Image 1 (tube, rainbow, N blue to C red):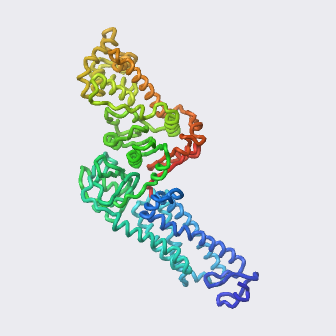
Image 2: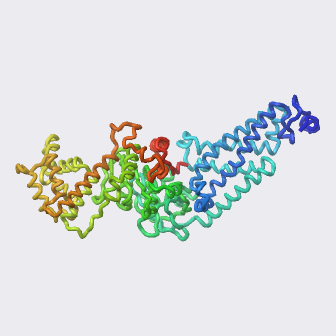
Image 3: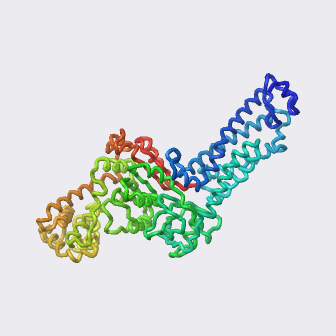
Amino acid sequence: MSSEVIATMPWSNGCKGLRSCICPRETICADDLGSMIFLTISRSTAWFNYPLYMLLFMSKAKNLNNFLQKTALRCWINFSDYHHVHSLFGIIVGIESTSHSFFHILRWARRNNDIQLLWTSSTGITGLTAIILCPFIVLPMTVPYLKRRMSFEWRKGLHYFSIVWCAALMCHAPERIFWLIGIPVFIYSADKMVEIFFRTHLVESAHFQRLGDTSCIISFENPPGFGKQNSAYVYLMLPWISKCQFHAFTVFPCTKPNHSSICIHKCGDWTQKLMNAISTPAHKPAFIVGPFLSPFSSPAMDSENLVAVASGIGVTPAISLIKQYSSTSRRLNLLWICRDPGLIEHFLQNVQFGSDGYTLIYYTGKERSLILRDDLPPNIFVFNGRPNLERTIGGIIVSVATGEGLPEQLHKKVLTRTPAEMRAKLLLEKALSIYTVDQLYGYTAKASSYYDGGLQTALALVAAVNYPGILSTMKHLLGDDFELVVDSITKNFEKIDTNGDGRMDRDQFEDFFYLMLVGSNVQEEPSIANVKQWLHVMSSCRDMFESKSDAEQGKDEFGIKKHLQGDGKFSARNWNMLYCGGSQPVLDQLNALERKFGIGLSVEKFDW
């Protein structure tokens, strides 16, 4: 607009030092160079924010995104991971809105009494309302310091100021912003109505059971319309704890047909109240909202080889994927870090982890030792301590790529119709896939000391084991088959105990153990040779996955880069790492591996 035209406006005397300027209305009047610059910045940030405003609300239309994720559009957009989009755009909108408001206020402050527009015009009042609410909406959900010190209930309550913020924006500018924000808000509201009336299920008798002091499991019959729950999460509301709080948890298939389970770890006020209320197993009502597709669903579907890394109850999405893809050619390997012994024992007892992937469990608890079942499949390895993630994941990749020691080759089913002696050999074979010979020798030494009346010195305890100690170990490993092979145990003990003193040292104990595996039947020698060969393979696998303090950090120990390069079956694009849990150090290491080897990484963290 020319200076002459601007001069006819009631809120300006014409352009100052410029031939033309902008002044269509009182709230947007820039009649000098400085005001023009500030207005340009303010308007640019507003236009930049328009699509972000729309996506902020569209990203939370969970039912719509759930539907779109099952269409061909998922080839370009991962609708199941839109919470990440919501969080990122929320931060950007917060920054851009601050910039927008700052330069508008700066421009008004330079022109006569225009600063009064901040409280005398609808544009100023609505803008001031929106910018005051922004910190209360954004900061508690994004700043780690505030997230640690404010309960989720308070942060979520403050986040609902976004409703007022949205209303202020719709009245802030000309009609276009009303429609730009109004349409997404209408879609979000309609989606919410569908969620409330059609996706919220009342479970009258959900079963609650504690797994220890810090975790519990909820099992329930799938309500009508619940659908398939593989690789999904739900919102849980327990009216006997709080009628207003809905919390997100992964849902996974229960061992009982048409039933699902939710595992919960104590980490806040709400979960503490839950743990206090179920000191004994109980049936209580619950509202289940969903299910909604997990962020894992898309990368798991698109990859042939998966490495699921979990910490604590983050193992539950991996359990869903194992069940979902157990009958396909996809290979899912699980690396689980957990300090809760009750959690590990429960899942090992009640979940079939599959035979075509490694299941590596790293127990980091100090509370007590694990009580493991004796018939763990040989592709399940249990370690004490934290893993070296690069070494462990590298070991998985090289094993799968080379075909040496594949999980399905290690997995041998023990048949109940097998003769007792051969069944005992297979049980001992499995024991050596779980424990090292040194660990078994140490257990036997302690048992020997007990039968000696605890009279052995520490040196003698390590130096030799006795016959009762051997029987104690064999009974523990063989269970009901012990009585059927006790004569073989005695004969093999006498063969090794050449001096007749009733004791064995470490080397003799190892010879005795392998003699139990070989047996006395000459016809069995070829099969026993195979057993010993696979024992060596399992020992090599265990060594490959075990953390070593002397392992050089950052070194490609197994040379996996040569397998990941190119376009072959085991190239990096055919692998994907999945992480679910609350450990930031673990996530940092996985991010480093993604950058180093080019393997994709997908994360599911309900750390809202």
